[in-house]
Image 1 (cartoon, one colour):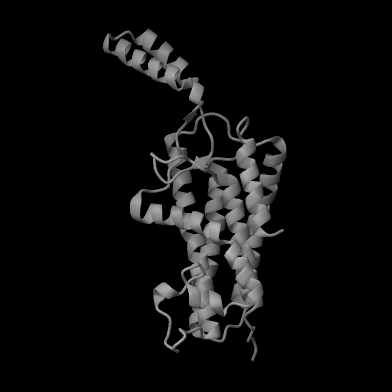
Image 2 (cartoon, rainbow, N blue to C red; image 1 turned 135 degrees about the horizontal axis):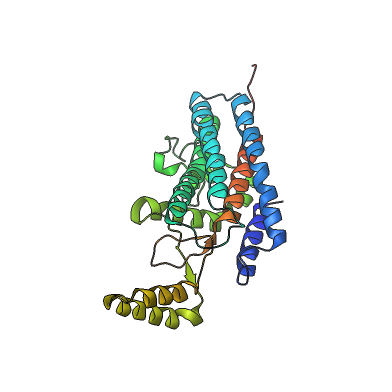
Length: 276
């Protein structure tokens, strides 16, 4: 299955979540994929460690960069599923959200870093240079669209597939850059149905007024009625003022699958010099 199909599946999950976050079939699918992540991660790491690279720089990026990032991704993914499983009901605590957010940020940074490492491995192994023969600068090494020399050096079959990844790269860069330069990723503590927003604000105002009068019993009644309008969805946003636009459980699965796919594709096109 290619990344496009995985991405469409993630979008379909998001659309169907208008009634329930995940259906029973979707939960079963998510758990099945999640259970496979650790073994798949170990298989990727093993392949990287056993590959005989010609360039020392490529070997370092593979073993101390890419392999360690994959290990971090699988660990943080496991922690997200443990702390806030997709079948979770009710409103999570602030501690749960903080723990989950930290691991989602770690995954976002390391997935981004995996593609940077893959580009550096490719450049080192194939001695990719500028048209004038000069070495590429650090900013020119990557697999995103602006890194034209690296993309031009890829075989045609990979060029076509990397272009298809541009929307995903844009999504990933938005999360990565928001966290690094603006505000960290954010899990909304709860959500409201638009039809309940006016009632929620009224109950919140009324609760504040009775609290000033020290009418505690009425205060607890009003806040309970207010809070009953809340619901939680495991979504991620790039700030409190932006719309949460990604269900993070399927996004984690899609991101790992994309890393897995491209580690394989890049290594398939780099000669293995082990034993030579």
